[in-house]
Length: 152
Image (tube, rainbow, N blue to C red; front, side):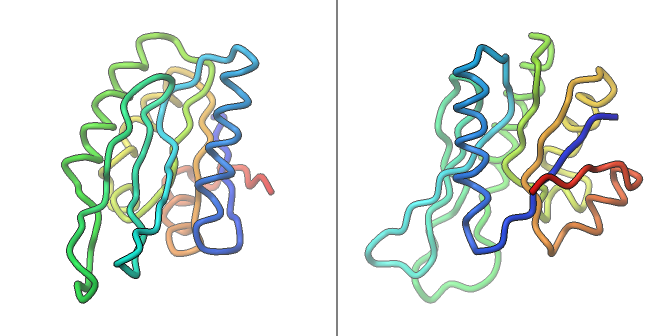
């Protein structure tokens, strides 16, 4: 099993790190699939907009719902996330060199989101790089049976 993850201190720091890794890997000719996240801060809201780019050349998808400055609770648009998951699942047949997943988040911790794609990639012996976070690190380690390698 070849799966690595990164934990970066500082809110929002994982996304640019993985985007740079993906850009560098693609620039070196590696066949990468998956997703990288780009956050932008609208002037009128406290919370950032979250977009993911489906690798290697896929579309940019808005995965956050704009619910206004007073909204509380979940902001993820699960339909948009599942669109990216479906596109990445189909790309597994292209025999990529690497799967990059922007985040092992709440959806993945509960068995949804990119989790089935990660499992399928590992079955096919495709190396996986995942953006981690402290909140879901325990679920990630359980999912990987403790085999996830921390890169920092």
